Image (cartoon, rainbow, N blue to C red; front, side, top):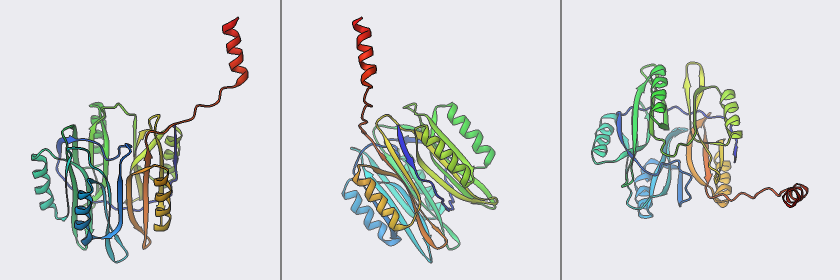
Length: 314
C-alpha cells in the first residue's frame, strides 16, 4: 500500500450547533469509488443557487461545502460527485439556527440523513448550511453535538464499542468554551480507522507521517483555534489494496489548481476539501484518492526461483 502525504499548516475556525439523530446514509462522501466530480472554488455566495441547479442537471450532488471569509469578502467552495441511481439529496445554506433546525427535522422525518454541515460567522451572526442524502440502500448514522472534551471522549469510545466509525468532526467555540460535534456511521466494512484531536502542528505532522507509512489515508482534517493556540484533528482510514491517495495542505490558489489538475489527470478524485484564510491569504487543502489501482508484482529473484524449482524436482 502507498500513500503520500504533504502536511503543512491550517488555520480554520469552525462553529456548529445541530440536533442529535439516528438516520440513514449511503455512499459515504469519503468513498474512494471512481466517479465523475467537479469543484467550484472561491465563488461568490450569490452564485451558489445557480451552480446547484447546474450540478443537479448534471446528476451531481454536493459532498463537501466550505464557507469562509477571504479578506473583506465572503466566499464558498463546493465539491460535487456523481449521484448514485435513485439517490436524492437536499441542500440549504445561509440560514440561522432556528431555520436550520426546522429544515433538519423536516429532512430527517422524510428519511434523509445529514452528510455535511458548515457554520460560519457573517458579521455578528452565525449562518448554517447542510446537505442531506436519501437512498434505498441505507446505513444507520448517529449525530451528536454540544460535547465538551470529556463527553466527546466518552462518546467516541461508546460508538467504537458499538461498531461505528467517525465520518465527520467539527470543533467550535460557544460561550467561551470549546465544544465538538460529530457524525458516526456503522463500520460495515470493518475498516481500520484512526482519529486524533487536540494536536499541535508538530505532533499532527508526526502522527500523519506514521499513519502514512502504515497505509492509512486521511479523509477529514479540522484545524481550530484554542486558548493554547492552533490545534488539529484528523480522521484516517486504512487504504485498501487497490487504492492510492494524496493529501496536500496550506496551498495558495495557483498551487492548489496545479496539484488538482495533476492528480485528476492521473485518475484521482478529490474526496475532501478545505479553504480558509491565513494572514489575509486564501489557503487550500485537498485529499485525492484513486481506486482500482493495479500494482506491479515485484520480479522474483531468478536464482531463488531456480532453487525452488530444483527442490521440487529433487
